[in-house]
Structure formats: structure tokens, C-alpha cells
Image (cartoon, rainbow, N blue to C red):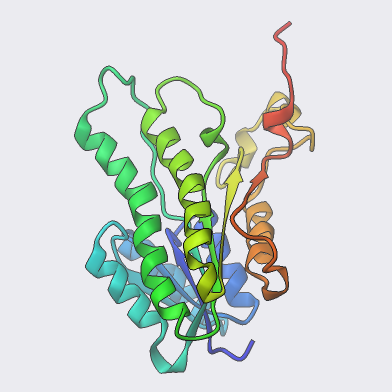
Length: 247
């Protein structure tokens, strides 16, 4: 990379987002990442910058339209162009639907779904002035299967997949491709607590790692793969396809 191609990553301060920030920075991109976690984001920026990576943390709430516009304006400063946007920001709430408040519902839907629209719109405005680009939305296998008390989260992730193909249709005229990834069980912190039965729920015989999602993002943001468009890729080790019977 020449340092002028920027990748914007939301929810980049920890978890999968943190791994994405580090991986794209090490690949030579200028990475701008947003998060509401100010101290955590600034620390990550400091660590990666010390290793020679081009990274910039932008303290932003991606449910706020003005914050999103500011984020994208930062991304194109100093002659940079937005090569890719990864909409990774998200939150969950596990609460019985009979007790779930409208405020809690709105909070999850705004964070997980509204932010995808706002960020995609503002990034596309910048991308269409150049040579297009790629947008990747992080959905979830919870869009297809559920446990109890996950209504807001499931609805938001299902909405992301629908929004993905809608945006792909609308933005194709600007050479912008839009795809989504549905991660399954991705362990980001407490790998030592996993039990053999956790791994056995997967055809791949292991729980997923953030790097599994990073590699899928690399594939979808590679300019050589622009024929992949408007689709969702499930990265779950086969978990959603494995039939499990209790003995």
C-alpha cells in the first residue's frame, strides 16, 4: 500500500474490531477506527503507532450523524481515499421480551443497524468521488438462529443482512460493493475457559478466533474480489449446520 488508501473500522477499540485495526494497519493501510471507548481507543492507537503503523483513533458515537460525518471527513484528509469501510460496532442485550423496554430496543437497533446505514452512506459519498470501494457489515449467525431473550440483537443482525443487499443494489452504480459477514462463536478474550464440548459443536472442531473474521474481511475488501457483491458469508466453523442431539 502507498499509505493513501484508508480503511475505516467502527467499534475498533477491542474484540474483533481491535484485531481488524491491527491487521489492516500491518497490511500497510492507513486505518481510522472509531469507538465510544476513548481511553481504550487512544491506548491502541499509541501502541500501533509506536510500531510504525498508520493508525488514527476517532472518538465517535456511530449512532450520531454528525460524529459519522466527522469520522469520514478525517478519513479523507491528507490526500487519503477510503478503500474500505468495515461496520463492526455493535452491542447486545439479553433480556426477556416481556421486560425489554423501548429505550433498550432503540439503543441496540441504533448501535447495530442505524450506524451501518449512516456510516455506509457517508463513506459512499466519499468513495463515489474516487474509484469506488468495499463495505463490509458485521452481522451474526443470530440473524438465522436464536436463543431466548435476544430479540433486539437478532432483529438488528437480520436487518444488517437485508440492508447489505439493498445497499449493494443502490451503490453498484458507483463501483461500491457491499457484503456482510455472519460470525458464529468467536472467542475474543477467555479462551482458557472453553471446554471440549464447546469446540465439538463445530465441524471445524474448534471455537472461532478473531483472525477468522479478519481473513474474511481481507477477502471481501480485496479489489480482485469485486464480483462478490450483495451477499452474506457465514464464518462459524459449521456450527449452524451441525445437528446436535442431547444424550
